[in-house]
Length: 79
Image (cartoon, rainbow, N blue to C red; front, side):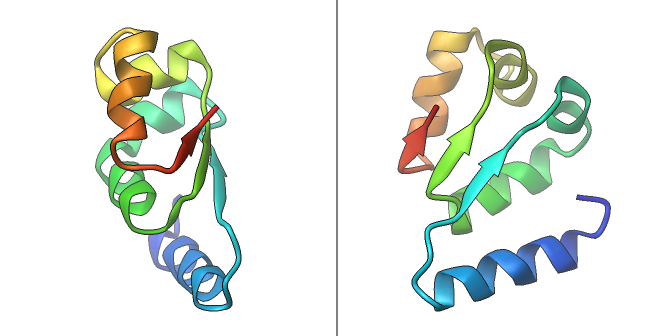
């Protein structure tokens, strides 16, 4: 995510070609440091989001259950 333009371009091209886009939050630090960018990318391009309980809490500021519900509002599938 340090190169947001490249990440977004790859996701946009994948969607344009009809591919499903998945995204793994990967760490609490990434979820915390790039909240705004991640939320924007998820809502525009991501079909399947992978996040553990800590990453979900870091990204949403909510507990795992409520955080997952919030993410499901902007993403088709949250795992």
